[in-house]
Amino acid sequence: MKLNNLKSVVVGITGCDIDSRRRNRKLVEARGIFYKIAREVFNFPLEEIGKSVDRSHGSVIHTLNHFKYWRVGNPQLIAMYKDCLDLVSDFTEKKDQDQSVHAKLISLQKRNEVLEKELASYKSTVHEQSLKLALEWFQTSITNCTTKYLEKTLQQKFWETPHKRFPKTNEGLQKLVRQELEFRHKTFQN
Image (cartoon, rainbow, N blue to C red):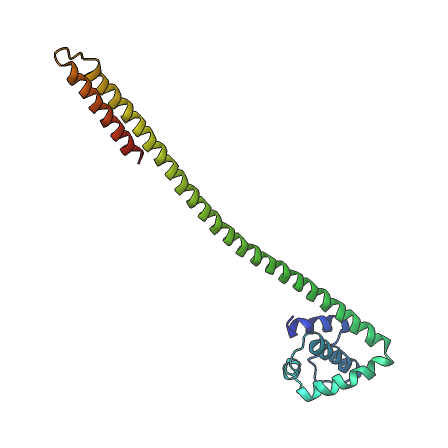
């Protein structure tokens, strides 16, 4: 809370213009309420408190030292002090709640950023793994198709065609074809 806001609260409750140069009792007590709250609740420096009402820090110290004696026999002063303190504490509590909500919001935003990075990492990992699986499936499919095609083609060329003139050569060719198929099958699998 700023000193001007606190001054407005005190002026509103006491009905006194604490900037006035007068020194009547009601004004001095109103300034005392202002000084006490500014110093003890908000811990403003004495010079700053004094400057805000055109007084020296010595006047602030004097008033703070005597304020406790003024309250003893003056229930009206005690009531005004409590009213000012209640308004200020309501404002301070609301501000603290706002700061707490703001802090939670910042914390959640940071957590959200971390989670978004983790999600992006997981997405890229899943994408890479799905590409690997697709590549493996594609290679397996090509290998299977190629092997079946080669087997069928070679069978049609060599096994289905009778070699009546060279029966022993036919057996040798069949053996070569099998070896070639086995070799290609091993090659495609690796």
